[in-house]
Amino acid sequence: MTEWIWVTLASALAGFVDAIVGGGGLVLVPALFAAYPGVAPATLFGTNKSASVWGTAWAARLYARRVTLNWSSLGPAMVAAFAGAAFGAWLVTQVSAGSLRKALPFILAAVLVYTLSRKDLGREHAPHRSVSAERGIAILIGGVIGFYDGFFGPGTGSFFVFLLVRSLGYDFLHASASAKLLNVATNVAALAWFVAAGHVMPQVAATMAVANVAGSYVGTHLALKRGAGFVRGVFIVVVSLLILRTGWDAWRL
Image 1 (cartoon, rainbow, N blue to C red):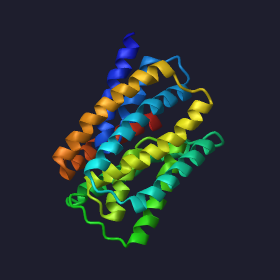
Image 2 (image 1 turned 90 degrees about the vertical axis):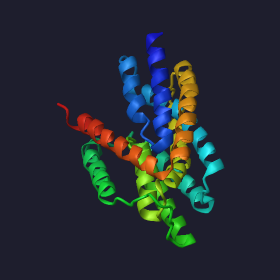
Image 3 (image 1 turned 45 degrees about the vertical axis):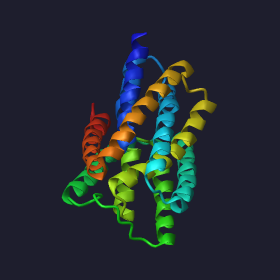
């Protein structure tokens, strides 16, 4: 019972963080590993996805009602993200992700330094690509980061947000809203693999899903109320914590 309460509360917090800028796994995955140390890692990852996909989908729905999204670009990008995640999930069963694990903290550090050095980055929503160029870049982002999510995963939402801001001129609010749609696609693709292999704890996942949606609801409304500057600030905090977490995971003895 104690473990169930712990992961349910963690799921609510994860939904809150994830709805604003991504990175909910930073909260929920360690909580699951701490609460259920004897359960297979694949089952814990599958349970995490089973809960977080609902919160991400709910956040995407709320954002779509309040933020103008470019569906002509995001629709194809979601298809690419799904395909990329499915391929990545298959490939990780064939090869090791060890090298990527060690490189990830440095990649995230470069993202953080770039964001901090560009004080105006993502504060104004000013898409500057042609329709076809934006669609092509969005598809590329969806496919590449979708593959990364299926193959490895940590920081997927943050990578989506950063690339949409940097490559397409989105502000952080529009980028976060768009990233939720892409994340739904990658989560569904990965979850399909976990469910097919039986790597889910259904009872735990069900209560976590409800909590995740509740946290997502609060986080989404806060982001919409406070705007792009607030989302940028949360992005910086989450990426900083991801650097610490992934660095610890990669380099601990």
